[in-house]
Length: 197
Image 1: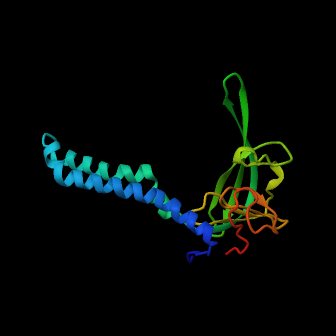
Image 2: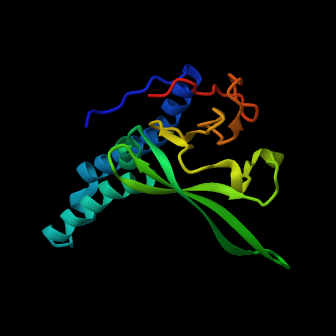
């Protein structure tokens, strides 16, 4: 299957570049420091350790920054498209100071075009019929998604683009549902992707 290379609006492209650089730059800096340390002080600081153990320590020092910064996962991310085949509500309980709160999450099952089936949790969910946009947090009503809705994932963006039956679309930056007539998200102000791949 050929790789999909969609064209994103310029403000979202800048957001993707910034999110990748936020992970890559610290990783490169840490790797440079680790390699410098190994080159200049490795032999003297680990002189009492067996050669094979020393090599394992060097490998760990090089691999650990990659794991903690998430660079490999960010670089392996790919764009894909699919369709919602199932919708579930998962309830969990969260302890507060004096109460036990029920936290609901909407989980959508997506069948990608390459045949792979994946599940994605869609942030918080409330039983309210309207979305609560207070404090910048998007809460979804249970009927926001339907089986058969088209789903698109673009490289580097935090949320899925879901095209609903009424042609409304979710913002790929904040996840808010916007009517098709909007060119910009009413919640975060970023461009709404209208042309899909």
